[in-house]
Image (cartoon, rainbow, N blue to C red; front, side, top):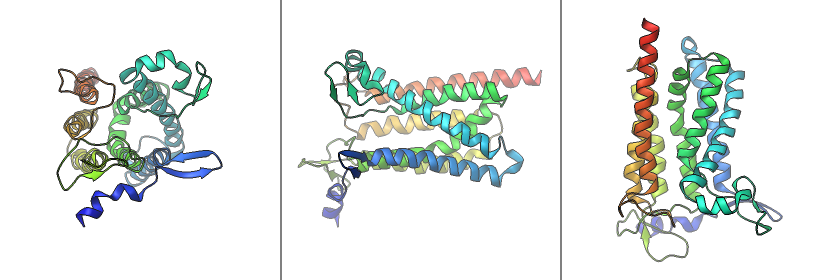
Length: 278
């Protein structure tokens, strides 16, 4: 049984669909499924909790299209800035196109940063809140409950794509990545459970136990940041990205930034509540 588990990645092909020379990887499908699942869960929540409804179904659908756009743009720009700034500075065309105008060659479209995507989503929500006259933290609190759903599909896509390998281990939890003879932690599955399933339960547990707007947003930022910081110890550091003090990965530094962001949200929401009460 253990041997079968350790060879589980051999059962999957990173390419989900092939049409002629065009290939669609599992991560791309999981990314779209994550978006669809998050929308369905949001609409279901709105339907079951009509007294707490924020917007109509049509407005939610419109918002989710913009969130998809903002998340993708933010994730690409974030990856370029946080992980490979020199490459994208020298090959700017590859930021949003699978073509390098410098070398005049097609290149694989890869590289998305969760933290960059989160910033992109934040910008979209800020603009949407202002335009639609909807309380910003009511929106972010609602979406904080749904965010772990996206993490479930995102990490599943990483696993099926056979990417983001874990660090070498002798544990029976370890798996063989293609072309390797050493066991590695299945870090993406750890992420699927802790960043996705666990946080979905954790935030749902606190949903009706907090009343102050912005609290669930803060809780998500702190909880995800802490979980991600810990899980980075099981994930192989990104190639070409130096460790800070030979210890901390880029993902850990960005996750610490989420604590700073949580502090800003808490301060802003507290100040806004004080102004309303006055």
